[in-house]
Length: 402
Image 1 (spheres, helix red, strand yellow):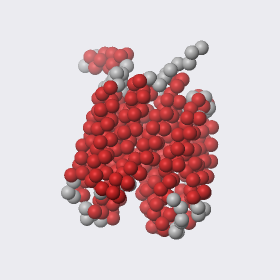
Image 2: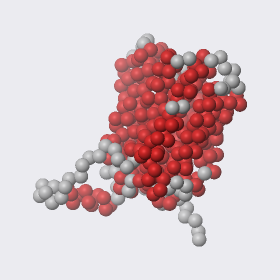
Image 3: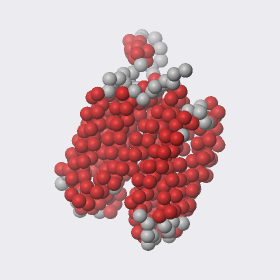
Image 4: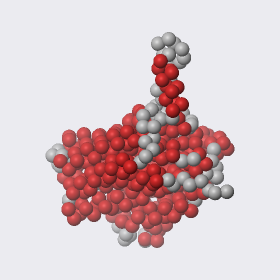
C-alpha cells in the first residue's frame, strides 16, 4: 500500500510561518528586561515587562480558542501576526516604560492568536493517524525557533543595539504575514459545524434548542495542560536564569551552547520518534520524560564542566521538549475536529502558566536559597507530574495514543 503523503505544500508553508511567528517574541525575550532598565525603570518593572506578554496571552487564549473554531484560521493568523508586528514596532519607537508595557500587551494578544491558530490550522490538515507525527514536526519548528532566535536577538543587540534587534523581530512577524498569503487551504470552519450554528441561531428566538455555551477551556484537556505546565516551569526558569546562575556559581562553562545543543538534540529525537508518537500510550512518554527532566536538573545541580552542561541539554530535550509535542497531539485527539481550537487554547493555557510562573519562581529561589539548592527545588515538579498522571490522566494512556 502507498503511504499517505501528509507533508503537503500548505503544511510546509504553515510550518515556515510557525517558525517566524515564534521568532518574533523569542528575539525580544532575553532583551526586554535590560531594555526596560535602559529606559530608567525599577527592578520590579523589569520583572513585570518580562512576564506581561505571557500573562496577557494566558487570559486571551480561551477566547481565541473559540474564535479559531468559528472563523477561518487564515484570518486569525493574519490578525495575530499583524498585532505582533505592531508591538515590535512599538518596541523600536517607545520612549518610556508605559508605552513599552502597552506594546508587551499587544504582543501577548497577537502571540495568543498565532499559537492557537497556526497549530489548529496545521492539525486540521493532517489525517487523524498522523496527528502525532505532524504535530511533532510542528513542535520541532517552534523549538528550533525558540533556540535560534534568542541568539540572533542577543547578537544583533551586542553589535547594533536594542532597537536594531527589535527591527529584526518586526521583520519576523512580517514574514509570517507574508507566508500565510500563499496557503490555499484557508482553514475555514467545517461546513457541518457552520450549518449547525446557523440553525441554532435561526431557531434561538423560537426556543427550538438549547444555546451553545461559550467554553473557555476543554475540561478533557485540562489534565494534559497541567502536565505540560509542570514540565514548562523548570525549563523557563532555566531559560531566564541559566546565565546568571553559572556566573553566580563561578562555573567555567560555555553557557551559550546550552540552547543550540538542546535544539539539535530535540530535532533528532522528534524525527527519530515520529512514528512512535501515534503508537505508544501517553503514559509511556510521561514517565520517560519525567526521568529525563529529573536527569536534566541533576546535571545542572552538579554542573562543573561543559560535559554536564551538554548532558543537561540532552535530558531537557527528552523531557520538556518531547512532552510539548506529546501533550499537544494528545489534546487534539481528546477533542473532536470541531473543537481543536479550544483544545489547543487549553493546552497553551498550561504552557502560559509555566512560562509565566517559571521565571517568577526562579527569581524567588535565586534570592532566597543558596545557589546549589536552586535546581533541587525544581525537582519537586517531577513527583507532582507523576501524581497528576496517576490521578487524572491514566485513562488517557488507555484510550488515546500520543
